[in-house]
Length: 234
Length: 390
Image (cartoon, rainbow over all chains, first blue to last red; front, side):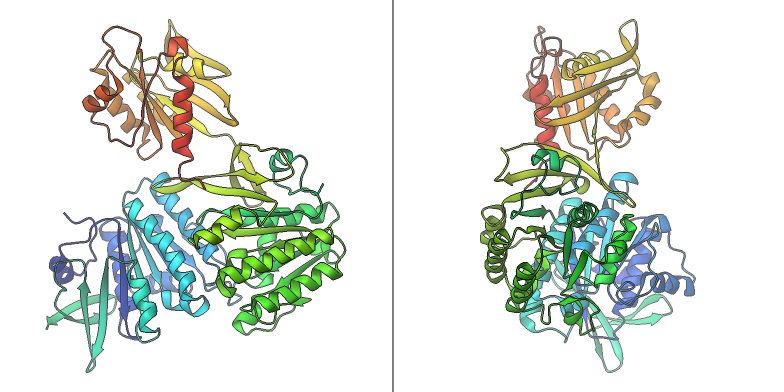
């Protein structure tokens, strides 16, 4: 039985869903559509499967993310959406915390980010009694720009452990080609599987490694607004 | 004595910190602990002391904003409050602060700045907003050895040194020296976790100027307000006639029940103070017609005693149902096998089988009428609640 799904039918079928407590790295080159995929998973997780979704953002402000969904006419169930915004404060923007948005003071402040994640977890699991929670981090690459690999490893070590014990799902985005192989290999130890995205000849592909006995085939996908459409496989 | 400004902590520490001492707030990741250092800063300023705050994980102005969120006006202390900016240079931004660490990734630069401050300042409370960030940037061994020097120097110049430290999984060696000999006092700040962190506490792990105090206090962080203590609530539930009221009264230093002809119809309420841990105890009625009250009583509980009559196996179905109603799923729980003195009482392990209870839920044998096993059960539950503490 699968505890979590991504909402991309072909991929979900290929791996048979994702077991609770899984931590997954999503890796791919810049501009390959990773961000939209992550938003798509966020929408599917919260609106379709009625999970709580916590998104840690180090790239876009929380209001920007919420606006993105509005622009695409997707209604997020806000009672189950939590965004930890690590951008707004450092840019000097007006940062007001709301029910959905918690503000961390900077991407260096892993302690603060950790506190905000824990607070959302407490709210969803203990207060709202939501059994399934997803944690998305977008992205580790920004965090790695400010902190060294050991620091990020320690941070993830704690939070991948929490995901396991809470039976949640963790998805952590990282840019390929930005970090040395050794850093990626170090971080990989913490994850149960990977969502790989690649671009070739103006086409984008996605596959999942480590969550099924064999890697899934590479699926070619297209982004249509806020939709991920699988158009073929190799 | 210099007060930390944390309620109860100063009392535990015999009035606060003597001059020249160092103290670390040892914070479990995910627990809102950095406010401890900030509250100490504000308390020192209010008491007319000089204060220096070393900022290494964000822009000093953001820290000033955080003080404001807590309702602590530090702007009026321009003469006595200064920040050491060890963040802006990291991101290549200009700094407005009086003290700037030009390269926060170099422990030598850090040391130069801190030692200068220690030597040039009148007795000051020096607070490090995040020692862990300094360790992350400068290395574990290097930072530990520098902190050792700073603390020694501070002692000579009558300063007080306070550090916020988030206990990420650093090397054993680093964690041991931080918990061990590096500081005069270690205050552990942890979370009560059962799947997720849902309560926070602090306690003294070590203090070389007071006798050992094994006491934990639960706290909440309010904005505005800062750290506020609170008394946890523990729920006592179980089927009709299992002995809940007797249990509550046996455990409590004072208790009151709302009952009719010996049957609880609203609630039992007791307060217990035992081995430094205090809690409010709420007993629920057992009869089904009172189920709506149970829901009301169970909100915000920290842990649950489930009382069963060991002589009555039919109880177990109802007991399970009551757990559902209390929504106490996921809370730390202890099953109290009551009436162990009566003929036909089942042994705890037998109850575990009948009940199909997982191994991690403890069962304690109790004779509530004789207060037998009552405090053992309380200790087991408190251990469950504070499990995973450092």
